[in-house]
Length: 402
Image (cartoon, rainbow, N blue to C red; front, side, top):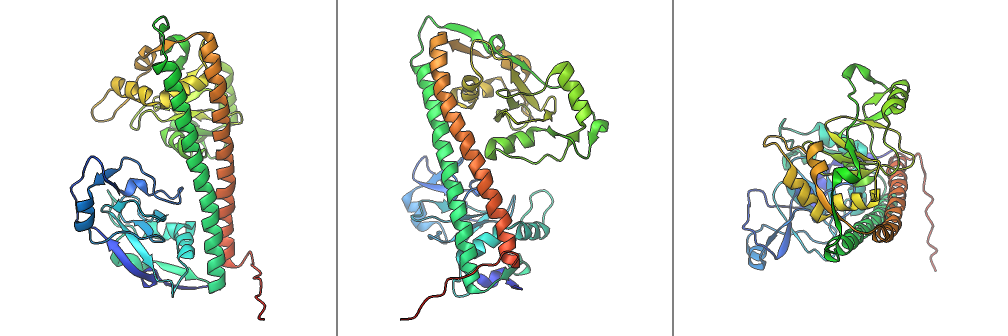
C-alpha cells in the first residue's frame, strides 16, 4: 500500500518564465514552446521553434532547465511532461515550467513515470481551470496527490519506465531519419535530376482522387468497424495507432465495400479540412471506413506507385503545392478538384521502379519500428500501474557484505 503526498512538496525548485515574452532571433539557442512537449516522446521535440541570442539567453530569463529536470506544461493541454537531456541546448517559453525534483524525497525518474501514468493524467485533467484554454496553476500543485512507494521500488519503477521510454524515443528518432532519407531520395530523383523531356501530368491523371460515401449519424453503432475522421488519421500519422469512438456496423461496411469499395493496402488518406495535408498510408490489416469531406482518398495508382505519391505529399515541395491550392479563410480546406489539378513531372517507368524499390525498403523499416514502438508502449504503460499497486512484485537482489 502506498502513501500519497502533495506534488509541490516533492520539488526543490520551479523555473517559471511566465510573463517573460522575450525577443527572438532568426538563429541562436532554440526557444521551445508547449507544442514541443509530447507525452509520446521522452525529450522535447523541436517543432516550429523560435530562437534567442546568447545575450537574451543570459539576461532575460529567470532561470533555465538543467539535466534531469522535468518540463511540465501548464496551459493548453496541461500535464504533458518531458525529461531534460544532457546537455541542455534549449530554453523554455511561457506556459510551462521546469521542475527540479527534491531527490531526498522522491526518485526523479519515478516521479516522471507517475506524472505520465493514466491515473495522474486523469487527475490533472480534473484539476484544469478555464473552458477555452485549460490551464493548471502552480498554486494547484499541492492539490495533486502523488503516490509514493518504498525507495528501492521507486528506483526500479523509474529506471524501468525510463529505459523503455528511451528505447521508444530512439525508434521515433530512427523513423525521423528514415523519413528524411525518403524525402532526400525523392527530391534527388524527381526534382534535382529531372529531365526536360519528362512528361508533365496532373495528379488526377495518375491516381483516382475521391472521398467516401456519406455516413449519417443514425448509422453509428456502439461497436463494429472503426469510423475515422481527421483526428484518427492525425493520430495514425504520429504514432501508427488510434482509438476510434465511432463505429458503423459490419453489415453496413460490407454493403459499402461491395458497392463502392473501401480503403485497401497502399491507398492514401489525406486530411483536407482544418489541419491540412496529414497523410496515412493504409496497411495490410487495416479495416475501417471514414468521413467524407474531412478526408480525401487516393487509390488506383496508374503509372506511378503509392509510395512515391505518399513521399511527395510529405515532401517540402508537396506541402508547398498543397498550401497553394488550399481555400477558405475561416477554415482551410483542400478540394478534390484542386488536388486533381496539381502537376508533377513523370520520369520513365525504369526510374519510377528504382525509386519505388528504395522507398519500399524505407517504409517497411518505418512500419516495423512503429510496431515495435506500440509493443514497448503497451508493455511500459500496462506494467507501470501493476508495479505501483503491487500486483506485480519485484524481488530485489540482496548485496552481500564482505
